[in-house]
Amino acid sequence: QVQLVESGGGWVQAGGSLRLSCAASGVTFSKYTMAWFRQAPGKGRDFVAAIRYGGGGTFYADSVKDRFTISRDNAKTEVYLQMDSLQPGDTAVYYCATVSWGILSTIRREDSYHYWGRGTQVTVSS
Image (cartoon, helix red, strand yellow):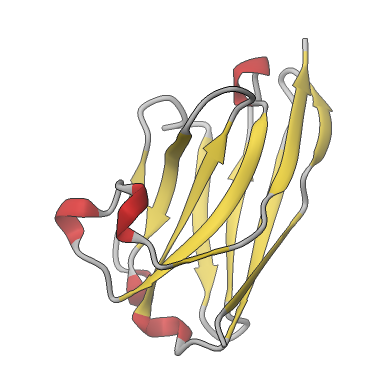
């Protein structure tokens, strides 16, 4: 049974930083592409960042590039999202998602991912 559990969300002032973690179980972690999505109030779920299986390649939404960093620890079966220079527009519920191997051309698509965590709230105040 695949399980993804996010942690690290919270409240921060604009310009601050947070580090999200996602612990995965029930998967051969190194063979799974991992991603972060977010959903702001009243909006759909948007791609934030992804890292391919084995750590081969990272991808970011334009809105977070140069501010957020995705990484993974295959030994710990965890993926992280370091978020710096946070802005009020980053306020959302952040979800961890995964898919076995994954297809490069669709790595930013929500429907490419088979398993999801329950999310962690990030609130950035101005």
